[in-house]
Image (cartoon, rainbow, N blue to C red; front, top):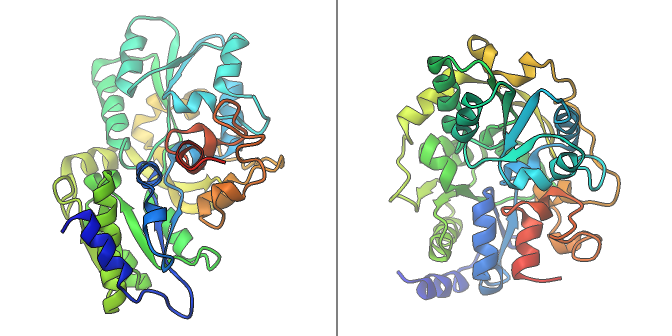
Length: 358
């Protein structure tokens, strides 16, 4: 079925309940961008409402943890490496970012993967730390890098791990009555690792339909169509609409290395607060490559949300659209962002600003 046919079919379905639209949340930043780029919200009928959730790992990293990272970056014996988006994310003070700290003398460098940081460590006597943010998608690569560093005996490399598991956050969202979610567009990248069956808890425990989707406009429409069909039929299951990439059991090798290196621990998410067993921590047997332990970095579990009017926390919960933030497009722009949702290439505010305007 083509996109036009699926959209026509959705328009013909009875989807509202008690006068309320069928509310679907995507929990992947790439989906957020794809939905905005395709103008999908404008193509769907009023009976279907799309909202964005905590799908951007840069965005959900709390400002308190970032403050600790910013202070750590000033150490003269350390080269801090990370992905490009994270360089511009402010801590609890506007304008205080890794880029700003670099201007003050910190040795902060952008890399495309943790393996780049490991290679950098081989060519210097300084301590090279890779600042890792992400979900199950990037965690296996970081885990493999730690194992490679151990195998090669690289002693001046370590990982500052701020990565998180997606399932606990999804549970927190669907249990929050303020969010009012009726169905989930599950993250295709995460599902490629954990498998489509990993989202079975949504229909089994919460009675919510779920669809794993890809990242082209038609992929997202196909996922929405599947969810709407289940809504109309009064059914709830997990539908894999990204079968060309995602398998029911996921990637066993990637899951094995993730499990080998990381263990779950309580963690703080911006906008969601402390969520039990939602953070990834490097296991004790790899403590030599855990920067938090090696350098005794304090404050990584601190919540220091800003009080400057930024509403990123509410946007990440799906209770507020980006345009509902009083700073959006006025005080907060991609050129001068106040919060992380405007910084990241996967942030809801950045997507809305780029494709929908102020």
